[in-house]
Image: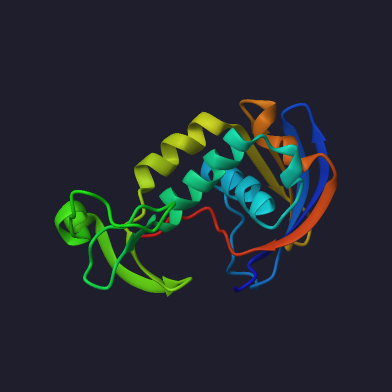
Length: 181
């Protein structure tokens, strides 16, 4: 992972989290704006293990879904390309090939994990933006003198989305606010 920003937060207050970004790739890197980046920061803090026990399972599932929207969902197949149940890795009945079921929604990426093959669906940028707007009430950022650091405030629409940010935390992120093309 290429570190684009270092993130330091001071914990949360209600539905708000304040923090500081530090650029790590030089002057050409801009500080992102908008709800998509606010959601990416909350997702990344959760993914990196901050306060994971504080999140209820439903909110954790929402963050997992947001990652799938952003990166593309993995769909499991056997070696002939038939879909497998994601939980059991058994053939879905009736048998159907991933290419027939998903068609042009497949992005061409594939791999293996745990002895099973997977294909990846294309990211769903519009749905990610919709989710970001539903989860993030506001995201404000202001560069500090010198330009390498910026203070930010992310405010969620519900305290459950920032429950994992109770304590201060430091992490590195490759998120930029942009979405895959």
